[in-house]
Image (cartoon, rainbow, N blue to C red; front, side, top):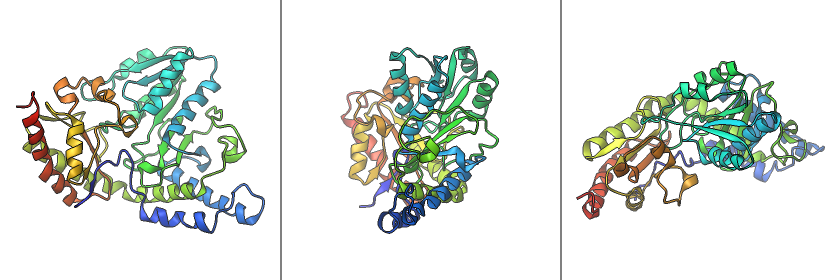
Length: 385
């Protein structure tokens, strides 16, 4: 059976070049980079090379602005907690209703400790009203944390405008760019973002490694306190093999940016147009222009997304109904609910997220099987007959 993997916003295949680069650091060059001896100390150079590769992909001023972490969630938590610790006199956070759980769950927790959180709305296309953001900022605002691109719909927020609003008002700005890095170009030398999170396994590096960009001059307080690693900003022995892998993945992503925004985007658009033409009562969720080139969130009326996924899985097609970090929950997507997606469509949403390893054959396979799946489920649904 052909395997068609279209769940790349959940995780990606580690690129072969990444695995090849990692292997020596698991077998031959396994020393601790903090060691005084040459066997361990020599790998410190490889970490710094990886740091430079991450900085280059982001268009950062300096490699020293990159801190390696274990994942996107740690990067998000570090950015938020560090900012609050560095500004203890301020107790207000601004975020959105459609953030990833790595941000939303932390904000919900912080509310129980006395922080005040404003959750910005989105419209029915998943877009923000920047006037609402401006109105929410007050003298007590410590941080604005707004994702670069939504993990479920792919909607890209106007980060440059948001960052400028934050800069003018003197508020620290963090963006969770986990879904965007490697899919769209970055130039942080021209984007006044203070903190930016990314995760390796979203751009063909292994799981278990991420990074946090901290603009030079931004107040910072370590989240993980321990040894001197990462210039004293993140304690814990470095995950050298995975850091090296992330560096290689960033180099590959830089080379593939044009492919992501041309060929992969065309594949996504072809899939959407075919499904909308073949399946009645279907809709794309979110603005079709301001979004990542690889992501499609489509709803089919009167049926359950989980049932669609199970039947697609039998055909060798791997997709999702939303964030992998909320998998197992029977609650409809918080993102689609915030967008006001009609109830009859809400449960029947499917996210297809492509990568540079997908091809036309994958799209044809989905288009061949999905309409029949929807038809069958509607036949047995009391609402879809």
